[in-house]
Length: 348
Image (cartoon, rainbow, N blue to C red; front, side, top):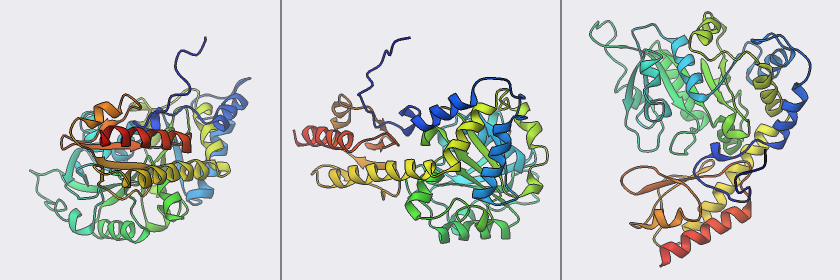
């Protein structure tokens, strides 16, 4: 088949828009050919177990799944009884962008808390951490944090530790939605383990697609006691890949060396470059810290649609705030051209 899209056009709508990293494509080709046992009994999934242990600790267990929504729903299902509830930020992906999957597929209650920057604190958790023993209220059992948040901000180690320790002190477990955990680690200069296992996080949804994979995410269980039954629920929730070697091989390529970090560092650097450029444009107001690979801003009325003639991006809310995302394949020229398009529209 011939290429039917413009391979030179770069968008700023999502890091999901990017293609597959060349090193991941090579890994997929290397994993092809011959036969391997299906449903996770292959050599690549076995290798992935070793690689995950090297990043998250010897007791960590990885469960490859198809997508981020599946990873989040499966994680939360494995952590809660049928009457359980999840405390999360009002802007969390599980609450805003998964079309009711946690509720409809997972049978979970989400207890959302408004936050100014997407980050929970012990005090914010306490707004919904109550009602245990009340049969009329869904029972809070998990706190779900997103790293980086949906507003592009990153929890510091101390901020995460405070939430995890507070949740555990209340008898709740902690789930970390790490679709962009690599970007947070790159920003903070921390290892994946330092942001998860060492802080007591119980289960992680670890992202690959936003960092250069063709498809696939991981449920990483850090507390072995919580893995019982998860492999059965993965099948029940239709997240068990028959040709799992191709999901696992991608993650081995991503994590066995430093590809995960190089890609995240580059995406973050491009967002910082864009932030610096738009800060100098009168009429553009950046609304959140640029901790990772996202820039949030408010534009003059009508400007967003005109800028979208140059590159696609999303309106974040009805108040005129927009989101610009950078990815592993964003180039300095892409950023500079886009910033110039923003300047031209806003100045006119």
